[in-house]
Amino acid sequence: MKKKVVLIVLCQSIVSVLYAQSNATPLTLSQTLRLTVEQSPYLKIENYNVPIAEGNVTTAKLRPNPVLNNQSLFSGNSNYFPDNSHFLGKSNRQVWYQLTKPFVPNAQRTNRIELANKNVQLTKYQLNEIKRNLLLDAANQWLNAWAVGVQIDLLKAAISNVDSLLIINRLRLKNQFATATEVTRTQLLYDQYTVRLKATQQNYQNELKQLGLLIGTDTDLSLADQDSTHWQNLNTSLPDLLNAALKNRPDLQATQQTNQMAETNILLQKALAKPTPELGLIYNPQNKIPYFGFFGTIALPVFSKNQGEIQKSKIVKEQTAQSITTAELRIRTEVQTAYGTYMSQKQNLSRWQEIIQQSSDVLNTVRYAYLHGGTTIVDFLEAQRSWFDTQNIYYEAFLSYRRSYVQLLYTTGEILDTEK
Image 1: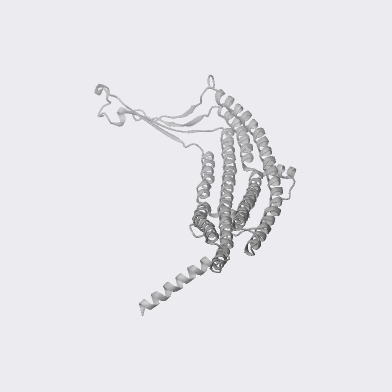
Image 2 (image 1 turned 90 degrees about the vertical axis):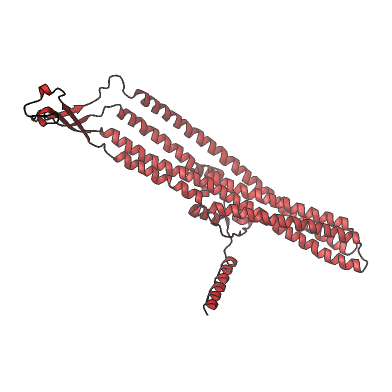
């Protein structure tokens, strides 16, 4: 009875798994980007950088600890020991207890905290830049898998075309309407497509595994195709795209934040030029006689006034200001280049749509003519290969168009919003 129950449960589990796999929603590009942000193992590692930076803020807020100092002196000559005393006796001992605390100037502490807070914001911008690059990798990997999937569909369509003709030619050979050479040549083309299909199917699984690694899953994946209208949602003009990029690009934001940190660092280095006083109390019993006093020390800024660090911080500020100018110029160039490529690929794709239709019409015409004795097997095979090559070139153009769209999203920073 127990074995039957276990068998039933096992069967139900297998059915549930198969049902879940068969009903798994194929991944679109936007879903891929969203999953990358939510569960990418690479991004999870980088997310720790923010709390690490926040720990530096906690450290910057801490005040210096008090310092306890003890000094004990004993007479080493027994001739000078007090009466009824010994080496470790209180009458032969002088003890110094000193409790002090450094008092950090408020400007030092304030600027140190502000610098740490700005470093947290810089870390967030750097995390967004890592995310932007990871999303580009995920999008391109999705496109890699999609391109191989398209190749599989194309090979299946070619095999279907040749297979139906092979069946017809075998019947025609029996009826002596076709030669053995025609059947053999059709069979060879069919075998070529079949071998390529098996290799392409394995390549497709490899690409899906790479995609699964980027989005943090080891389950079987499938892709949902999207028609061309999905890739034409970017109707913004070039000036608007440039403004969006200069506003949203995390690498530029990180450079600007670094410039602000350089300004704060100048203030901090100037504050560090001021000495930090250390004040406290002293308790000093000498030979049973207690003494009390006060302690104070401060460095005299005669030689060192932190001149080197102040000079360096000013130069760093000039360097970061130049970095902002360079980053803005680079971003403008990247966006203009990506936009020009996108528009060019979009125009090319519309031309190829006409060519691919003509190629299909030619193949159907030659096929009809061959089956009715109006042309030779050579003409049909040539038309079939021409159709296949044209299909490949068309989908290469389609892939280039989609890549240019993704690249434009990447250069403008809009890719960070596509997963929402």
